[in-house]
Image (cartoon, rainbow, N blue to C red):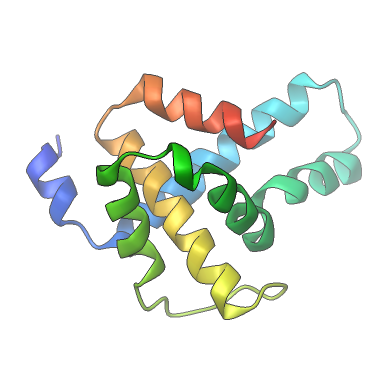
Length: 125
C-alpha cells in the first residue's frame, strides 16, 4: 500500500505513467460503450482523446476548474523532463499532456475517486 505522503513525493513522471494507463482504460471503455465494434474505428476514436495534443487541449479547458493542489501536480508534471516525446505533438503539447496524465495518476493513487470521475467525465464532453 502506498501512503499519501509517498504519493506526494513521487516523481511526476511516475504519476504520469499511472495516469496514462488509467486515462487510456477509461477512454477505451467509453468508446466501447458507444457501440463501436470495428477495431480500426475503436482506435481512431480513442486517439481523438488520448493523443498528447488532445490531452493538452483538455487540460487547458480544465485548468480553471482545478484546485491549487491539482494545479501544483499539473505544474510538476508539465515541468518534468520526460525521456521521450510524442510523434505527433510539439514539446509544449507533450509537457501539458504529461501534466494532465500526472494529475490523473495522482487522483487515482490518492483514491480521490469522485474527483477523478468528475474530471474524466469533463474530458469526454
